[in-house]
Image (cartoon, rainbow, N blue to C red):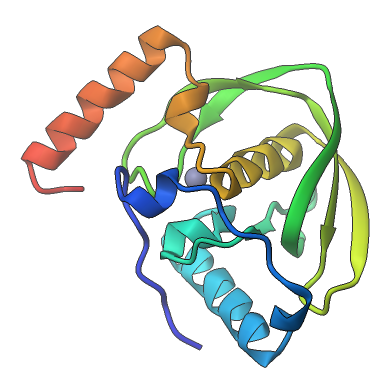
Length: 172
Ligand SMILES: [Zn+2]
């Protein structure tokens, strides 16, 4: 396994729409990339990581939002598709492609998501709270959308200011 380099905003790969993973791509190579993505995510202290964030413009992401007892919940989503959403939640989000930037984002509270696992088998999950937030955030990455795009204009302005100051001090 190896750690992958994380793309920082505004790398063009973060703003491109990811290509669907084709049936012929479900092989050892895909499994290796997914394992590397998990390792990279854990090392960076994140709960989700999408392929475009590691310079791979395809529709897939990994996440591990532990349950209430802190038990790990390691999941890979290939070709994710949001089937339905419900309610709303407001909370602070971060993103490994925006190191040091945390900002309030409004998202749906509950999401039904369909995807394929790393072997190509389809599954559907009904998730809420942080897991729903994470699925929405990471599926956005597959569509070239970053959390900056989901902020209110005021929060976006604050985030942009923070990015500028981090870039100036070389912490980006
Ligand atoms: Zn992100």
